[in-house]
Length: 194
Image (cartoon, rainbow, N blue to C red):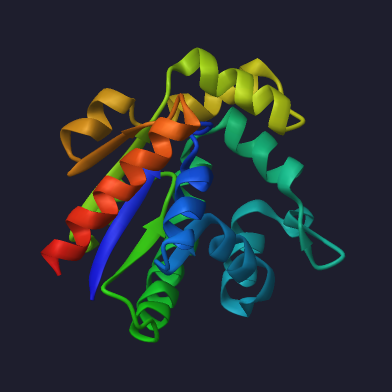
């Protein structure tokens, strides 16, 4: 089973690209979604997050995202500590999931693939890029957030230039038709490599 990492900075369009690969029959694992699900249902993760952040990390059994975001925004070390709790569990969950898939390759979409060393567990990596101005505009439309918060998140992620250096494929996501064409070309290349 070939594992393809799909990454890109916040607002680059990873989800759009993942959906296009899914239309081609490629199984997609969205690591951020699975991390959130595990943070809700795993007793071990809950216990460790409460020890890290305090009881307020959960409200009525749900993750208190604004509370966590505020702490991380003011002290980046908490992001690393939280990732150290959550990411190993997500990695194990992904491995079990991948074994159940019947396809030439699977895609694991991870926003901070390189930052967490997750690229080492991938056979190939696709990075989705877009100019920062476009990414910020997309995020301001999509999320209830501020430019300041977007820039803070971007500072915790590698630059596109850094990601590109370590990637096998790059998709410039500024024009949907061109993006779809790039997805198709990469899909064909990956099918040959299996």
